[in-house]
Length: 442
View 1 (cartoon, rainbow, N blue to C red):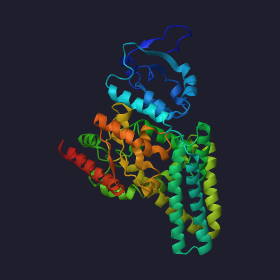
View 2 (tube, helix red, strand yellow; view 1 turned 135 degrees about the vertical axis):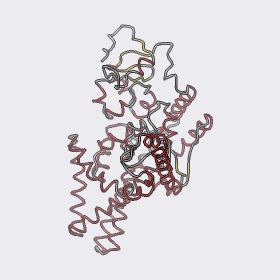
View 3 (cartoon, rainbow, N blue to C red; view 1 turned 45 degrees about the horizontal axis):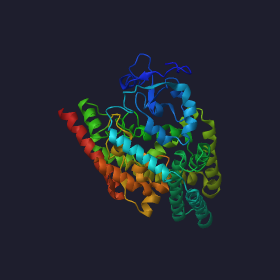
View 4 (spheres, rainbow, N blue to C red; view 1 turned 120 degrees about the horizontal axis):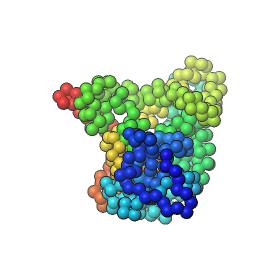
């Protein structure tokens, strides 16, 4: 580990070649360095204590991290004070501000766009908007209980109540996403506190688990071994053209990938939440000693048990719970995968922030229903470029993003909702066929 510069001494100067070796892998000392605004930081010891998670910051070791740093942090001045102890020098004067391999004009244009977005107030939240979202979730939750309480537990009110509760879970999922991204309050601590309430008490999941996975996804979307959302490759699915061909050439076959567009309907949307997330969240909270998160989670299960057990009995309660998780799982998987699975999936190539996000994300056409149904994640491109932006402002920045794409010849994909769903299946079919061809003939 490099020693910080003594006060008053001239800063050490580094080249990109030196920095590029400090990725934490392959280097004898396993050093991790990164660059923010031309300053070089040694995170070799700090990365394990990083509040956003050890992995997300490590994904930028050996790289320029200026744009993700600006994208993820609210109070940058405060964070920089803590970073001073990690500072070991700066880029040599003849070195460019970011890796020479990156598109200089595109990086500069995006940073100018970021400044414009801040100046126009697009990062400022409307608190009434988020209050009304929370209110509609609480009203649906109450309506679900009242339905069974008033109409009884026969099939029709039971199914209607399950549908309402499934909607509550999906919408609370989108709302916790807002707080998790620090999009609602100007102070991080208030976002974190309400995030624990929404994801813990309204959904029964730990905030720390979501943070651990989701920030990595945003830092390096669709980058194999860095984005946890593509970890289903290769155990369950062959994803992306490059990785599928590579898997076939290595003669790896964990599943019959040429049929993955069919078995996706079995182990994908219906199974993810009830068969995997439901038990893994408890394992995560206990294994990582996240006792506050676990306490918040238990308030959800205790409330659900106490309110529905007298009305339904044990069997009815368990049946309702499973059905709600099934509805939530289908909703969650189709919406979250439609923006990413059909897009470019590969190893991290360390391209600029704008290109990293655009090649891995696509949008779904705007409408009141699509906005509500997807929690405004139909504006996935804008969300990925500006993750702390409150979702009610995505539509405002979209024309500026489209303009930048047009200037640099980058495709800005937007499609109808059902087309986006269909593209998940089509892309799985295509990558499965690529795997099979490579497996048999290459």
